Each structure stands twice: as structure tokens, then as C-alpha cells.
Length: 291
Image (cartoon, rainbow, N blue to C red):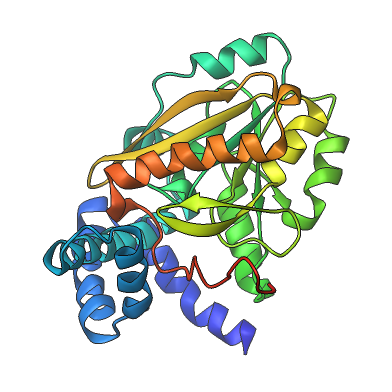
């Protein structure tokens, strides 16, 4: 069944990838009607999350953010498949990355770094775009998916233009093996963690379990921590911006590093709530419950 689903879907995925962006967005408009109005994909989860995060907003404003989020989600889904075929020049056109000075500084010093970001903007295209610059070799931490055919496809998509991947359970070993290289290890660490390596703090006005792995590894390897924001300028164009969060991680606890990251991500979400991944049941765990 896994193979059948894969081979049935593959021609459509390549067709989407090869579409001009304007035509793809017309397809996305139709997908939005299907996902939002017909299938109502995780709509209760999205609305519940938005109401928890923004109790001061009325229902009309919550519904508006919800609609904007689903339009963005449909665009994001189709944009991700562009990684199958997009050229380096095309990627640079759609994902701007103009200020790389902070990375150049650490690259010149031979200093590896840790990058933290959230499921905000277009993280799927941002990784390969980063890898086109003559700076750090980028390794992104990811969770393999259960269907081995689609897992191999996604792996190929993400690494086609030079980005590398660490599976979550092999991250420490990979960083240790690459210690003599100048690397950037990227964590998209804003979803619900396992019971291990959890720090509880307020996030979007909710008591929230936060994954502390980036802070722990930053201290372990003494790698500076840089936050990346992927802002949507207009439909089809994003901009990568970076900010040094922690220069000397050994001077802070992993919880303090984690809090700095989450507060910075929260700032982006509050400014553009439609660009965060609200379909995840982010607050399904409570402090006194199990995983």
C-alpha cells in the first residue's frame, strides 16, 4: 500500500513542481476551498489554538486569521514540492537572503553554530536556499516519516541543492562526527516534545512544554545560537533574516537559551499569526500529565 500511494502521487507532485508559480497559486486557490470549506481539515484544532493564543480577539478577527492561515498553508504545501525541480536561480528569486554577514563572521573564524527557527514562513525552501551561500554547511534535524517511499522522496527533495539532514535520534552523533567541519545545525523545535528534555514555560499565553535540545547541545559544543526568521514579503516571495541570540552558550543554562529562542519566535507569531503552523495540537500536554 505504501508503494502504491507513492507511485500514484509521484506524477502529480512533479506536475506541481514544474508548474509556473502563477499557475500553481491558481491551483492553491482551489485547494484552499477544498481544505477549508469542504474537508475542514483540522479546523477545530486551528480555531481552538487561535482562541487560546489570542483571548483578547473577537470571533470575527479569529475567523479572519484562520482563513488567512489556511490560504498560506495551501501555498506552503505546494511551494514545498518546488524543491523537486527548482533551479538555484529560481530559489534565489523566491527566497531572498541578502544579509549573511553574521554567518560570514563565524565561518571566517571556523566556528560552527546552531540555528533555531519555528514552523513559520517557508522553512522547506529556506534550508536549500541557505545552502546555496558559501557559508556554513547546513544540517537540519528532521523526523523521518513512516512511509519509506515518501521518506526517501522528501530526503532527496531537501538535500538536492546541498542541504544535509540529521535524523532526530542521530543528531548528537552527527554533530560529534562533524566537529572538525564548519557546520550550522538547524532545529525547528517549536512542536510538542517527548517527556524527556522538556522545559515548561509560557508560550502564547499557554503553559507549554518546550524541547530543550538546541540549548543543551549549544552548551555541550559551545556553539553560538542564531535565530532565523522567514518572513513572507508577498505571495511567492520570502526573506530570511537572522539574529544572534546567544554568543557564549556556556554562560547560560539550557532553559535560559530555550526561553530566548521561544520568546523570539513568539514575537514573529504575534506580528504575523497566519504564518505559523496552527494545525498541530500544541497544548495537548499538561504539566502534571505524561507524554
